[in-house]
Structures are given as structure tokens and as C-alpha cells.
Length: 196
Image: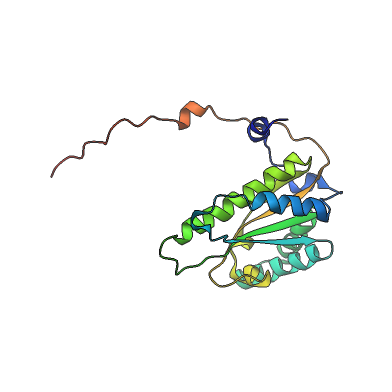
């Protein structure tokens, strides 16, 4: 499959449909090398990649449940158990974060976050190119300061996603893609602003 076909046929695989084997250490190295090619205005390299596998997935589930109990003290045991189980669905998770330099006057935080988002997409595409399935997930846990702290991230850092990776246990149906014409317009000249 060539690069354009990979991009145009990319599809997320539900975490429940990701099984063993997961990428090995050499393949994880290749995934991170691909992620490091993300656009990076100013050469800040504002990325962090945290590998979560094996028993660490259960600990991450505990972190999710503890953080949710702090956010929403009324959560019942079943809801907390569902949160504990989330990281166990795929054999490998790579958390992708933006290491934000809030004092950089040239590169605003949004551009640093966008660079980390591009790195997450590169990682996901590299996983697909290796024959693995992947899905980029966020949710309340990904935006909770207690979770980011537990993952070793700083106060200003932002977790942009948790990329779940494994071997697909079933082939997902190709997603219906929109017509590109609905998203495309050509610009010719500035709009005329009405004078007051």
C-alpha cells in the first residue's frame, strides 16, 4: 500500500477489537520515530510519549477511577469499574502529550498542542503501516489534572490523547467518508466589510 492509500483508507479500530500481539520494543521505537517527524514550529520538540502496557494498564485504570471519584463524588461502583477496565481493552497504550512552554513568545501554546496532535496522528498512521490497528482516544480522564500528574506531566503540559494499539481481532467496516467538495472553497479576494 502506498502512502496516499494508507492516508485515505485509515480507520480507527475499537479498543475492544485490539488484541495481542502488540508492537514489540523495536516496533515501538519505529512508532516514536514516525511521531517525531511531526511539524514543529520553532523546533521546540514539545512532545512526550508514555508507554503503558502489561500491569501498568491496570494501574492506569485505577488512576482513571480515582480521578473520576474526585471529579464526581457520586459515581457508583459500576461506573468506577468501567473506568478501571478502559485501559485493559488494548494491549498497548501510548499517551501523547504536549510539553508546553507557556512563556515562549514566538510559539503560542495552541501551536505546541497542535504539534503534539500531529505527532499522535503520525504514531497512529505508523501503527497502521506496520499492520496494527489503533485508535486515538481522549475523554474526561485525558483532561483531568490528576491523570496528567500521575503520568509524570507538568502543570502546563496537556495530554492530547491515548493511542490504543494492537492486532485487530476483526476488520472494521470502512468508514463513510464525506465528499471533499463540502469542505473546499477557493479564496479570491478579501470580503468587503460594510462601513458603519
